[in-house]
Image (cartoon, rainbow over all chains, first blue to last red; front, side, top):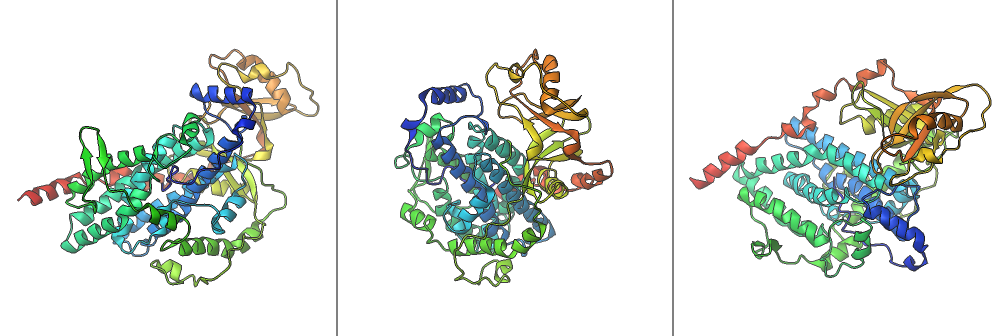
Length: 328
Length: 203
């Protein structure tokens, strides 16, 4: 699980005034009652658009996220770690398939989504534009990036769109071992030799900034969330997710004698919130817009897979079948 | 392209290749997948796969939906062959919307029924009925389900013959599932290690 469903740009907020007020009221009442929206139900255009964007970007994140983590499959230390990492990465790619299906039920064909990914039109979780230099980086991703994604997705699983919730439920069930595996890897490094500890600390130092970016810009600059919260598209604010992550994992990092490269990081016991140095949001913008250390490689790998696999799909193509949107 | 990932370096990717969209060619058909977790349990809808035909859809479905959790049976059906009623909400049972009679001609065939009992959950297999068409099958099922305790929000009706079911022999594909303990959280206990580390730190 790699997605940060809340970290991406939003759809343009316009046209809501053109919706049929009667239908809109029924739609909102259904969500208010706690019922899910299904693909054939009426929904505002903005709801559809925002969900497609969010689920699609989540799916792309699963695919692209498999690249930095998979970097170390061939050199994972020992047979057990290799088995586990392969199984985990396979799961993540499977999650992309589930998510693409959920987005398809809203009317965007899978091929169009893949096109938008490989032409750079569609975004994915920004953190995967950074490289995994050492095995310790792969451990950081398996434990903490996954943990961040879980915070986001447990929230999203309570959302209003049926197919997305079902995909997330299945994803969360399959995830049960990922987080434990990642934590196990980090514990092994942190309690190991001096060299292993150094490697793990260096990985944390490298990844802390991107990890703080992961939950998206601070609430004070994040716009348009009110209606998305009312429609249960967005279930928790960026800052709330970030705070929850810090609350759950900073103590676990400290417990291992590791440090976090932010002298201002501490929990304010009065407010219950974590205080921290804002990460460099200019860097976040620059990287998400294409100028990160690995943007080019990530897309090139995906595009190459697409191109070099084309002959297989061509050979399999059967004129009797026809693409239609999945039912649910 | 040189990468930290040796698998990527080996691909010999041209860094300056163009960003053109791929040729539109490979939109495979869509198939709905139903899974039975344990013998005796109801089959449930799990999702969809895209495949060039029903046999390939079965293989993809096996990989996608029965790789991780338990499974004792699986079937796939072309999405176009699923007859879908309208969706209702709140306290409205969808069978109230079914007409009292339907045109029917030709031979009777078996139809499988799937009910959505809670919005947001999956469709579950209920049973089958012999009828001349999906519409007629719905009419026949109406008397049985219109007074159900809980409202039914949506029904899928599928001709049994349109479904590719896993067979008895297929079941060996799930035999190795219990052997893959490395995919269970329980295989990653490390509390002792952390405890021992803390004691060392305090010395």
